Image 1 (cartoon, helix red, strand yellow):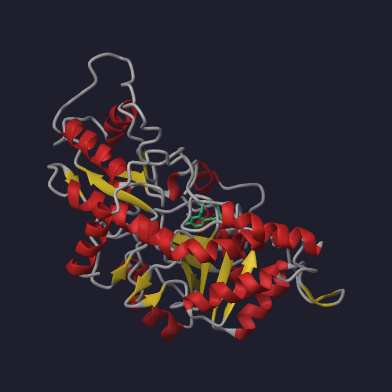
Image 2: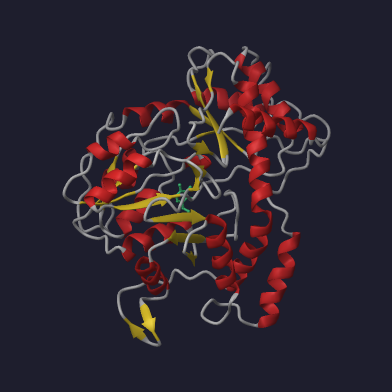
Amino acid sequence: MDKAEIDKLVKRFVKEETLNFLCEERFDFEPTLEEIIKVLRSKRIDILDGLAHVEFEKQFAEWLGCKHAIFVNSGTAALFCALRAKDIGPGDEVIVPPFTFIATASSVLHTNAMPIFADIELKTYNMDPQDAIKKITPKTKAIIPVHLGGMPADLDPLVEVCKEKKIFLLEDACQAHGAKYKGKYVGTIGDAGCFSFFPSKNMTTGEGGMITTNDDKLAEQCRIIRHHGESSWYVFARLGWHLRPTELQAAVGIAQMKAVKLNIKKRQQAWFYLNENLKSVKGVKIPEVPDYAEPTCNWWGALLEYETLGFESAMDMIKVLCRKNVFTKILYPEPLYMTKVFQEGDSFLPFKMPKYEKGLCPNCEELNKRLIGVDTHPFMTKAHCDFIIERFKAVAAGEKLDSGKDEQKPAGLKATSAPKPSKKK
Ligand SMILES: Cc1ncc(COP(=O)(O)O)c(C=O)c1O
C-alpha cells in the first residue's frame, strides 16, 4: 500500500468521527434476520437439503475471484479438509509458522502428519519464506503460510518453490478475508486458501469456515470429505468427517457479504490511525506494511521495547493499560512448539513428538515476549482510537497508576478498544 492510500484512509476516518462510544458489538446483525427467516421459512435448514450455502459459496468465490468456495463448519475444519483432500497423512511433513493460532498446526496433527516449524519475519510477523524453504525435505507435502491479523505473508518465493517441488501451498487466510498480495486476494494465490468465520474475524457466520481453490479435483474432494466421504447417494468413497455447517450459518454469511467491504474499510481506518499516531512513541515499534500488501487489519500489533519503556515485561505494561481501560493483549504468548501438546504429544497421535528446544525460531520467541495487540472492529471510532492513543502515550511516558484501584472510565465511554476480550484469534 502506498503512502497516499494510507493518508486517504486516515483522513476519511478523522472526518467520519462519531461520538458514539458504544461499540459493544462487532457486527450489525439486523440485516441478517431477514436472511435467517428466509431459511427457516424454507424449512430446509441443513445443507443437504437447502440452497443458502450454495448462494453463499458462489458470492464468496465471486468476491475473491476464484473458481470454488466450499463452506465448512470452522476454519480448523477448512484446513483439515484441504489437507485430507490432498491425501496428506502419516509420514508426511507440513511446514507451518509457530506464531499463529494453534489450529494452523493442530489441523496438521489431526491428519497424523508432522508439523515442521519455520521462523517468522519480524516486520510482518508472518512466515519467513527463506526459513520455510530451508526446512523442506523429501517428506514435505505442504506449506501453510498464515496471513496474520490480515497482513499478507510474502508468497512469491513459496509459490515458486512449491511449483517446482510439487508441494501443496495452502494459505491460512483465517484472519485475512479481503487482504491482497500484489493486487490479488489472499486465499487464491496458493493451491487453496482457508478462512474462518469466528466472530473475531473480518466476517462471521457465528462459527464456520471456507476453503477456496481453482482446482476442480480438490474442490470435489473437499465436498466429499465435508459430508462423511459420500461421493453419491450412500456411496462412501473415502473416509470423511462431519464438517458441514448449517443453512442458518449460510444465511448469516449471505448477509455478511453485503457488509464485509465496508467493515474491512472501517477496520483499516482504525488500524492506520493507530499506526500513524503511535509511530512516534519511543520504545514502540509499529508494524510495517510491505509494498506488496493491502492488509485487512484484523488486529493491530506493535513490538514493545519494554526495557526502554521502563517495564519488566510487555505483560507489565499491558496490565497498567488494562487498568486504565485500554484492553490490549500479548499475541501469542509462546511459540506453538513450546505448548504442552507439541512438547508432550497426545494419545491420539501414532508417533512421539520431536524434542523441540527453545531457540528453534528466534524471531518468533522475540515476538512472543514483545508483541502487544489491540483488536480492531468496524464500530471503532476515532474517539476510541484517540482514547487508546492518549493512554498508550501516557503509560509509555511513565504514567503509572497511583493506587491499586482501576481508573474510572470517562462518562459515556463504554468500551475502549475491543468490546470484549476474545479468547482466541
Ligand atoms: C490463523 C488461524 N488459523 C485457524 C483458525 C481456526 O479457525 P476456527 O476458529 O474457525 O476453527 C484461526 C481462528 O481462530 C486462526 O486465527
